[in-house]
Length: 242
Image (cartoon, rainbow, N blue to C red; front, side, top):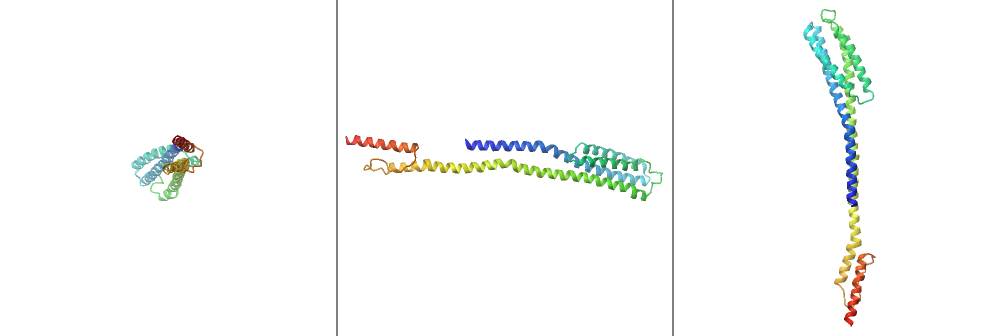
């Protein structure tokens, strides 16, 4: 019963720990994963917008505006996902910075480019539009890095907590094994060895003795059995004398 109790307690503790891990970590991991996916989507949209600006610089108004419109929708949807999946304290501030930089970047291509001084103006693109593109891209990469690090930290925490959840079972199993050895030793000393002595004394009983020669020193039921056998031998001997 003690062994069963140890294993039941250890199993219950382990199950509770794993349930806590599942409940507390699932949402965090999902949010980190969503934020990483959103960051990748924003980077992809930003690259497409950069291509759209270059098309406008080449005078291809229709194709450039189409790409910019599609990419803008993609970027804003991904930004909304990131805003709804904040897991770190400084993440909200970083997302707000990305949103602010995107607004300024968007102003550069929402205003007319074709048929203005900007068309074909590589200096304007390189010194103004592309520089804001680079800064915005850095912020998005930073957001993705934060979530990747958070994901790694959470995975490490899950690993450590998983080890702690398994420890009660391991300790209980080791304790059960040690208890089994102690129980075997106790049974051997208290029952098996005295029984062997008693059996040997019965086999080697000599009619010349008045009692068994077992040398059992315990005060338990086996000793009582020896006493009763000796009493029986005495009665039998008296009957033989009569």
